[in-house]
Length: 344
Image (cartoon, rainbow, N blue to C red; front, top):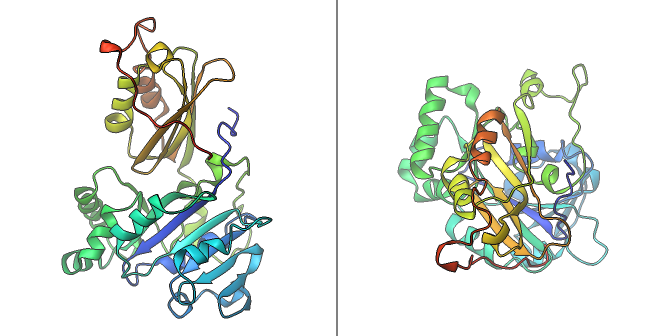
């Protein structure tokens, strides 16, 4: 399938949040050393809190750190959030991606609301990632509302330091997380090492192929890095027949497996969709769909990204969404109340 189903012009933003000591900076450093040439703008609350590895730093000013591979780091100590973002979105900027590393004490509710409603025309929120400490989650969650809210207001949870607890403990943590946020996508990591394609949108929205170290290459990581990418998988599905909008909604809300972390594509609802082209995307817990007019033959094309995807199960559920009576309108001639596509 063509990976350029949807071409986004806005710079995506991912937020890293988590309680103090969870491993946000370790994860950030891992992303910056595995970005495959992307120019990443990094926004942090205070340089004193982040301790970016010295090998990543090229130079420092009052407001910014210049990092290797074209990455730049801005501090919220000297700039407010919008000013920091504006450092990266001027005309001629070569920034591909922005990562915000939130303070461990940042209010998740306010942060999520601000980013989802006030980002402007040149950037868009991709996902909010919460990093939790496997050793201290229960203590933090029981003593601090913020630690619980960070699980409630996010798209992905990364259980970090899983090597320091038993596998039984990891499963207990997963159940605790799901009790707070039943649809959140959960990943496990050691020292912040994960497949970044699962939390950053570069694989879905861009044609860039992500290459990872082959065995024998020295990247100064422990043996865990050999297994980081083993479970990453994608599944593509095409249908010439229109889907039923209500069945597709039920699939997204109730039947989409939690090991699918991202999805996007174009959906044809036929006559029931008023012969419009629907653009669908899912990031963690957040499904979104907008419409525009067809400029080519109606067709459903979907791509799913996750870990250990059961392709047969996914195909079965998607086929169940096909409209068995495509010549009939929705009962009561219902209008699908969905927003028209804005500039993406």
